[in-house]
Image 1 (cartoon, rainbow, N blue to C red):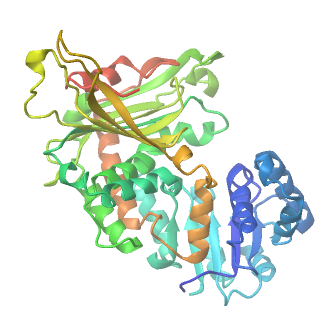
Image 2: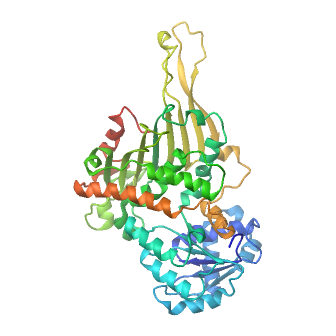
Image 3: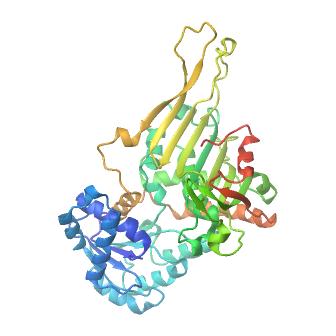
Length: 485
């Protein structure tokens, strides 16, 4: 089925993701008149609620997480009328007929948002199928984690594919819902000045950093089994690599864009066990201070010692014609000094400096795409300092800024899930991840983990509030490259 559906089903509807992101996102779409007029939203989880109880839960979430200028009592009241609830234990088939009865007729389309423990994927899919909630008018979206390696990911995808073909399966990576991430495509393919140099002839290297200041928070159970490589590199960072490195798609649609992304992911040079020691760095945060706050070590937060990495840095390569020889430096970690996500494209120097004899020092141009907390695109270019130049020419690096917050100040910035939920409801797969992408990502990640196991790699300690272990800095500096910070 194509086009907008008439009903939405939220699994995990009383969880933290729903409270912080999904309910406020759906309200935002409702308040702006973007949801189909008759769309009903059914929440389900283990928690015992009736419709009124779930509406109270949703109202409290909106009160906590909506900006003050969005709290319109009339709009909130009309949004809450869309909501209903059915408690469900997804591990057994018993409750699914009642869920189907609560949802009602799905001939006008049903979209399902499935956020559940990986162990419940298969029974949930079987339950949906048994209750008639997996037919041709139903599409499903899957929230990560989708497995912990290639084999478990294939197992989950096979279970989903038994009831939902690929064209009705929408895998979420919420980074793809961020405006600045989508702007990578506009920047690359909407401007003629970048594409001629967007290759190994024009670019020296690429850096991608996703830095977090937080520690474990309430994710100890998940994170201890995942680590930074699975939690951040396998999905968010590799999707950014694909967008930066992809060939121009023929058109802006789900098939063309994802065809080009998967080519990049399949072109990632495998990191063999013999190379894992010098192409990757792992770390685990110790006690320290982030900002003004003194924080515990990972082991103390966890309550025991652990070999799980909370920091990873990788030197990667895309082995194809466009990118041969260009290193991609990837880095992510917890308890780092600042919360920021950014991509830095370092261009090659000019082939000959005409200013050297006059004392002018050139620096290579850098394009910085900041995803959070601010959203901007900044091109660092060389300019001459004002003056008579009697003692030589003075050159300085100056930024050309496109601040999305400033340039589009009159446009409300949306939560990434607003875009993704609306695309799910309307059936647009462009910003969702296809199965072949996921499997190419896992294949590369599994190779790295195999190298760590073969070499008995243990994460190096680093103090909270630093930029990770010193080996992470050495990873780039031995190539004459410094991380942008």
